[in-house]
Length: 208
Image (cartoon, rainbow, N blue to C red):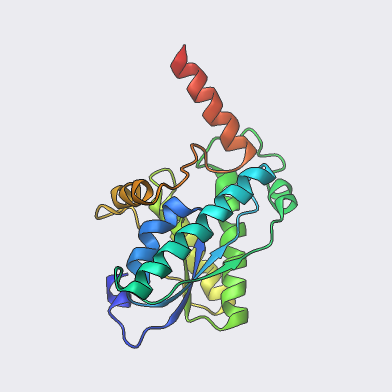
């Protein structure tokens, strides 16, 4: 990724974002080197109120970053945001038969592909030079699998995928700092009903 970010002139990059806390560090790094558009496409998130809350936080954070860029407080190019369609039915269709699959298993891999496929399709349709995802920032996500899927889809759609592991080199810790700085809402489950149920079970077991 470092070699890519040192390229000039800056190119347009479409960044899939799962939430504001994860995108915070990713945007901070990327907006210094590329013309960044954040693509919020997460049909896995339930219920609707949770989806809308995370989307609103994404818009709020990008608004703050752009204000700071305009004022010279933050270095980088202005960031755009693109709201994807909210299509929970697509997620529930892919999850059929995998409802009891543990986190980081096959259901999650299919969810990664659903979101990255739509990002690759949009990047190809609108002429972006490449695409990437914020999902690799989370310690709970399989960055190698995400990059494998992204590179395959990049070849399929004819748009290069930027392989990353944003959690490394203190990236995850930086996202925690930025979340505190901007007072971001930090959810305690990935987003789908299955991850929420698993999280609630873990909390109940911890209390016992």
